[in-house]
Length: 319
Image (tube, rainbow, N blue to C red; front, side):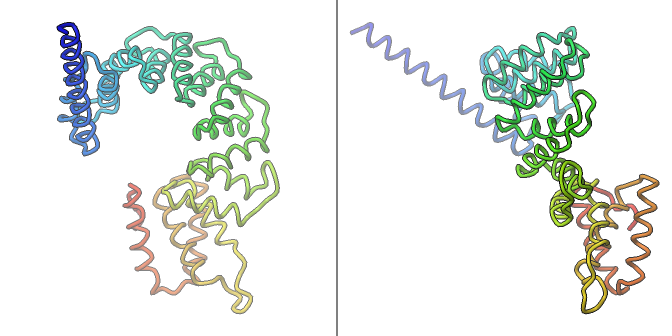
């Protein structure tokens, strides 16, 4: 009876400790979501001696410089503790620490081992982290085929960044033979999953016929989706494609909504793109647009462009 009572008291005590830890972690998570970084740090620190999730969150705060100067060394120390407590994302980040030699010697083999641990636990992009090491050959023996295979495996398991990375490798043709049709396929897969860079790359390939037939309507569609998400490299291609749209057969002119889009996307490009050759294209588009666009449209369109750029963190320097 006494033994049973002792066991019961022990289990109740363990439950109380666990419940207290969960509550503390929840308070830290709430503070972190509210960007109350000092509060979050203190809550996580209460659990740091034994709780892997708290250790990982402390590492994130140190790595990202949330509420304090970024400290990669402290971040890696926290990630190491969390990784040994089997937190999958911490295992991936500890791989980064070994790959970059943060507070430890660069160790490609250790990096690969931690990436693979993370991948086995469901962090599939970690496969591509390992693959990148083999593709570059800087800290492990170069093996481009194995590197691409690891990234492809991550892509097949549903990692959107890995899909884009595989597409990049096939498009660039540096580490592996160029295969534009494969690049277009993987950009398409990533684009469907809302990767804005993949949407941009796919749009460019569709507009130029790289890896398949030219399809200008699809190209414009993907490029404008990327542009609408604030992906600045897409602004000018969208303006160019709209500028080359078919005219209205009844009027012999571009429809008013198309004309407005040309002006606005070109204006957004002018505010963010400082490439001299492309600026010449932007200037020509602006001159042609202003020659046919009613002058009274301009103030309202300029306001809309300015608001859009502010929303996406750009400074409209030309307005």
